[in-house]
Length: 215
Length: 379
Image 1 (tube, rainbow over the protein chains, first blue to last red):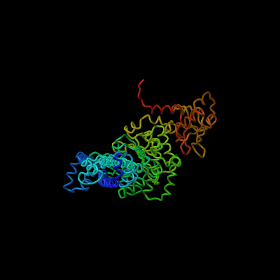
Image 2: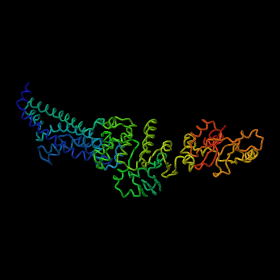
Image 3: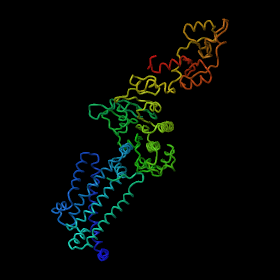
Image 4: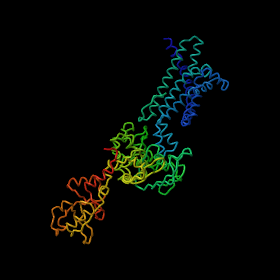
């Protein structure tokens, strides 16, 4: 009961922190998309390049979040910037990988037909490859967003704000309600984001495509 | 018209996939490139719309060097149908067909009207299929859409790369027949690639048999069957193929070319003499004095001479008249049909001017068939 009491008393603080959290994760994922999706497209036809890029992204993935924050702080100081930097690095792998898989999964016969019909490279990309790969790409974005929301929670440790702040402060103050509120709302946020992106994905995917499982 | 001149393709500057290939394709002609896999037939076809760039030589379409045309522009004016169909799964049938015309910025209403016509043409009713997605169609239906899509921009030329190979035999035959029907109607210039000689013989106005990047023989189907230029072509076509496709055998192929003529006023003794001399059992009775000399009047066989002792009997009196003249280009099936229906033993074969050029007898048919059926077994 005290948890509900806490939430009722502090809903504006929680909303504010949730807002910060969304901004942090959102910016991180958006930047990662802006870098990752075009990179994915560029390296599709180059086995060597795609191996290198995927390996680098894999390495980022293995570094613990706190360690990345530590690397980022000399560059960006404290606050949201190093947190966003870490988020971008984490989000890159699923986005690049899924873009790559999505494009590579497009049946070569379809591309050949498109070339034979006289579509230019750009037309093939936007009219054929993107629509066919979009559900797989969106799968990557969803994974990146959910992990991003999780990592943004740790961002509070270096002063990035967000719902993680409630958790860390709660731990410091032995305030279980505060800890729980932070934990519950960041989890709900992740679920909500995944749900909304799922709707977007369905809207973007043609009904003619049988949805493939994301990897 | 498509004209390939000394076209060569090499990927490593050492081995040539296609070598110094010359090929002339007339407007409105359906030309089949046929050969085993790796013979360069697909490469040759893809060089026409520059999906593959030739390493040497020139390709002209209606007198224009294709190198001077923008490749995408070139391809938009050449229909393209492939084995794996390659419909866009995310677009409805309607939009699949409309893709190229819309790329060319045609008026949308006109394009959609054209789509409706094309769907009718390939026997897929618009109301039923236009708004479906490719995966909701069977393979045969999908390839019909593939053909409709290739026709969408009303190109003069269509390239077809083994379009029916992936289909089941029944659907394949259906689509082959429909292609022939379409071609009768539309008279496009079609380059059709296949490894299936039966398909080639069925569809091609002319067939180019290819091996090792070269055209070995470029001829009408009948000529490929009857006069294969080399042992390779013969074995590729199959030496017993002609026998399996009796429609390709014409009356002139199964007739005995030995025609012994006799005037209608000649006597029986003379007839017997002629038969002995030429070792034949049948004579063509002709009118030697009429304004149209050598016009066939009737036929005299040995039976007609039997028991005739009166030497004043003339050929004109005993000959069998009203014999059915067979045009020289009638096919074997029809000839056999007529012979069976009318119970005829001797069928004179006439050329376009009505002149007798040969006689079909049971013996002549058997002779031809024994020539064709390979001597594989020893008895």
